[in-house]
Amino acid sequence: RTQVSKFVENMALLDRLADIIIVDTGAGLSENVMSFIMAADEVLLVTTPEPTSITDAYALIKTVSNRDKAKKIRVIVNRAEDNNEANDILNKLMIVSEKFLGIALEPSGHILNDEAVIKAVKQQQPFLLSFPKSQAARSIKEISARLAESGKAGALPQNAGIRGFLNRLVGFMRV
Image 1 (cartoon, one colour):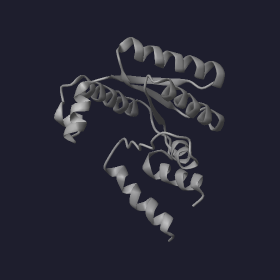
Image 2 (cartoon, rainbow, N blue to C red; image 1 turned 90 degrees about the vertical axis):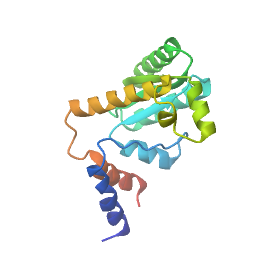
Image 3 (cartoon, helix red, strand yellow; image 1 turned 180 degrees about the vertical axis):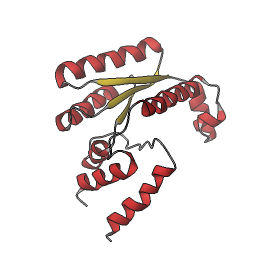
Image 4 (cartoon, rainbow, N blue to C red; image 1 turned 120 degrees about the vertical axis):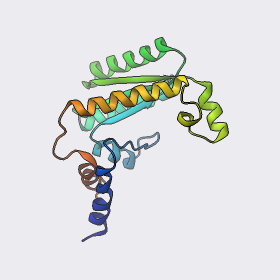
């Protein structure tokens, strides 16, 4: 067996440990990031209200749509000042993505700007543990519940899950 097949087998053990695995690729459109995104069962795109973040989000949506218009992309707005700002950003991204790229986005919630997050960072603690009743923590819990519930709603394709993801990832990376 090759090193790659051993890696895929060992990573596939995660299938038994979690229903949902989130990989934070960071910002940017490098080929490695795109390999992760295209190998994923679905994409969870997080943007902020800053114009550069929204532009980067649209660029990623455009790149994904050029490769696979059927790819499921969920969008979350982080650090919004209020519900109106978050909804405005989500609506604009959905409209331009549908109109110009032919890809439908799924709004998946937002997280309001919260001082508790800044305090937790200064304490070097996860804000969900340090401030579990904060607005940001409540938002994360709501988004998580929505993601978990939507995962139960539809049957996943046979090649879904961590094993399918890893096999697709290896194929994209041409290892």
